[in-house]
Length: 521
Image 1 (cartoon, rainbow, N blue to C red):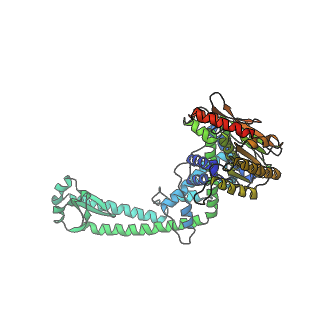
Image 2 (cartoon, one colour):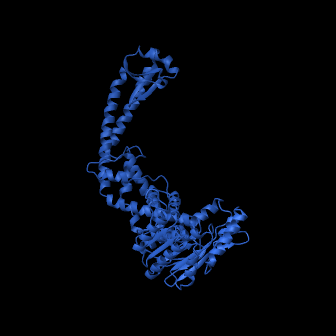
Image 3 (cartoon, rainbow, N blue to C red):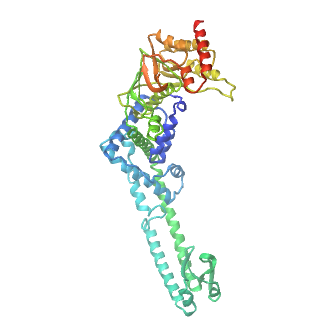
């Protein structure tokens, strides 16, 4: 089902989910989230979200940290002769440890991993091999091979010898005074050197290697240190060669597990997304809707999640009003009427967004039990379709959407049409809207339609398979209540609202006179 997700504010849900993920893999999946290809896949994801929600409520849901993106390293490792860095191996180990944190949770909640419990199995022995080889993110463990251990012993001996030679040299009368003023042993490019004043450096036999901190002193390698430093440099070169050999061998071992690691990352991706969805579910008090095969929608006191977020942030004057409605084979179309700012568009978008969320496997915010049938597509026409780029008027823009709907819509389609028939002569617009609704009814298409046009209100009342609904309005305060009343027909109240918003009485009186004349004709 490829719904018109952008029109339904689905990107906002993606952004919230992305902030609740723990890994770059889950974050990327949240950003690209779309309805599942079939009901079974959606149900697996829903089961994972429900499992994560139970763990969250018990305080057992982990928030994985310090997990890097290792996909580039895996691509590099696929090349014959490749050698990964210690940092790359450290990152791979961190991913395996994150999976290790999740694995015990599957004993109680096997549905936590949407791809199956076995998908979170780490390649046998790989983490142990990484631990034997690495000493943190930037070094190979000194004892990772017999030769490397011996080379480390030799280097330690040579460093100790170099320090002893420096100590002896500094004890001579020509250097003892400058050593008391802060000079002494420094390490420069792996070689032991002395930091001394420039004036002193010229009196000592040795090789200048650079300048000290601040640029005032010289870094000097006395002649008696050159041999030891050369020996250390040779040992260091042999160590680097041995470390590269060890890392290349470990890369070869890793290459044998690439398929398993890619499968592991996919499992980690969807598990992290399920955990993020559980946090979203808990935040908005969501629940898992029943996903059924046949098309249909039953919402029992359901909410638009962004209205809950606005209420949470104090951006609404009061709590949002829940939405209750049903669509099914006997009543496939709901026609919502009522004034502007009454909440018709919000109701329409709430239905579409909650259907899309449910078909992604997400929980939806509701106080009652909800049922979401399986639609292959959701088609939406909401907002001003005027396009300067394509030289389309608002009406022509709506017609373009209607053309697409009439090509694709069937009994497995949910159609959401806001202000159907507007943008042209009201009578022609109403006639066109009726013809479109006739066609959708014949196809068995389900839909929510909003309108101001009076003829459409009569149309809904005259057809058994169309339900009238109205957004309730407080006529005394002329303010919306945002509550949908199924079975009612709403008045547009355009003149009353115009008066409340300051239009002159003389203009309104003339408008009422014109309206009476129009009604007589």
